[in-house]
Amino acid sequence: MIGGNFPLPLLNLTKLKFLSIFDNHFEGTLPPNISVLSNLKTFEASHNTFTGTLTSALFNIPSLTLIDLKDNQLTHFLEFGNSSSPSRLERLLLGNNHFKGPIPISISKLVSVRELDLSYFNTGMSVDFGIFSQLKELMDLDLSYLNTTSTVDLSILFSHLKSLFKLDLSGQHVSVSKMGSNSSLPAHLGQLQLSGCGITEFPEYIKNLQYLSDLDLSNNNIKGQVPQWLWKLPTLMSLNLSSNSFTGLERSSNDVPIQEMIMLDLNSNAFQGPLVIPPVTTEAMLVSKNSFTGKIPRSICGHRFLNILDLSNTNFTGSIPRCLRNLNGYLSVLNLRYNQLSGNIPEIFTNATTLTSLDLGHNRFVGTLPRSLKGCSVLEVLNVGGNNIEDTFPFWLSSLPKLKVMVLRDNRFKGLLYHPRHYFGYPSLQIIDIANNHFTGNLPSDYFAEWNMTTSKYFKGFHYIGDSGSYYHDSMVLMSKGVEMKLERIFTLLTAIDFSGNKLQGKIPESVGLLKDLIVLNLSSNVFTGNIPSSLANLTELESLDLSHNNLSGHIPPALGGLTSISNITVSHNQLVGPIPQSTQFQTQSASSFEGNLGLCGLTLSEKCGDDVEKEQPQELV
Image (cartoon, rainbow, N blue to C red; front, top):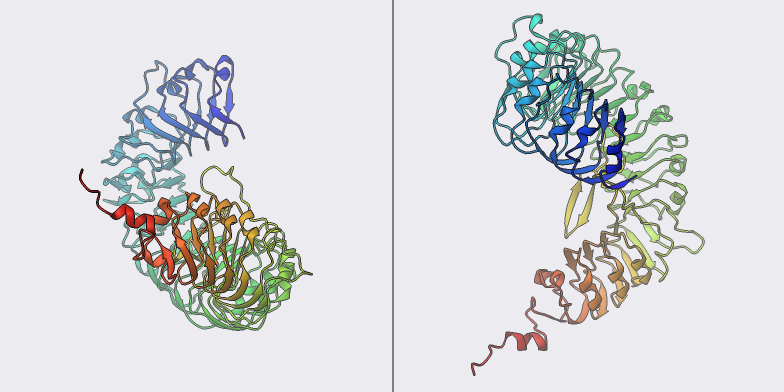
């Protein structure tokens, strides 16, 4: 990747026709004289960090057919269109910038444009959606999340834009004044995204969209049953009805009759009774946070193309069907979290060579971890927290080269975390949570020396574990800053260790200071003794440190006051003495962060140190 300002020498290439500098680290403003590239046909500069004003000079290049500047940090978009010749622009992609203010009316002059993306344009005012009615050639229109109080009248929009194939109005308030006949609908509309549009009834006009393949009605207020006519749309392949109040399907059977369904998302509704069964062609099935009952049906094992299966938070009982091994080779995500499943976790993962995320947390599983997990060669996330598993620490999982997240918390794991014959070499581990188990023993001083909890500092923007453009995102609960925090998506730069609530003893290993990318460290509620390691001062990225409820003694190392990123420090209920470090990070903590240490003193405590007492004495007037 290349960085710096826009490379001005490119402006000397006046015969240049195609310029692609996308997905780099370019910053600063675009050159106002970019129109000297008068032969330019395509300009692709998306996924950079360009700022400032989108220069109107771009629109004066007569041969230009594509402007792609999405995913930058541009802030102003001024009126344009002073060129004497009509625009040939066919694709204008400006989504996901920092634009503020009105949408330029001159957009209505781009009569040749076929694809227009203005998503996340922060208008902060009313929008005249009539300006888009002039763009008769539009096939792909994205006006999602414009931050406006204006309402989009679909009837009017559809009546003018007959060529539309894809329309995204997510986040806008949508209404339908009148929708007379099929003639008022775009004949070949294939993708319709209306997420978060304040819709309260299932739109009847959708039944006339015979070429519809992708429908998103998520995050609305639609109640009742999913209408039967929806399943008669001949080309529907992707359906997202999540975050509504649907209670069931309007038919006698719970089978979805569409034969070519690829993605079905019914998350966060009020579906009841047996599980809705999708077609065998389905690749992604997401039905979490509903009220299904009974056991996981064995018929789901016949869906051999399933790539994502999310049945979390759905009240299922019984055991995991052993026939789920039939999905090995395709399945990448299996989420059964927050159910009432019981019994042993079956040995069904021997050939699960495509599984990247396995979440079995918060059920009633017993027994040991299945050793067949060693066959999950690309596993990134393993969560079995909140069960009744009795086992020793799974050193054998170190053979998984891509494992990033391991959650064993709230079980009955026991024994040592260290064995001299077992190299603790998880090469990709970023988060380990083994809190509230029965682990015992000492940790040698070099315990963390072989750990590789590092992250790339060269990611631009936000990246998440398992984030590859799929329908599913991993999530977890992490103790941070003193409270349980649910992470709906796991940030790739997050590194965390939670060993709390065990019976670990001896000194905290000095080698912990080698984990320089660590953000969360929780060693509370153990039996650690000795001093707080001064090497903790090397953890410059640390935001949360909890050493409470141990038997630590001595002073708090003054060097810890240099941890400028830290916002939560808890060392309560130990045997610490001496002054609290004189830094803003320590002095802004509440007294409860230090309570239970009778020898500590400082301005935030009832016990003041000698120097603090002098500071509080009023100065005598001379």
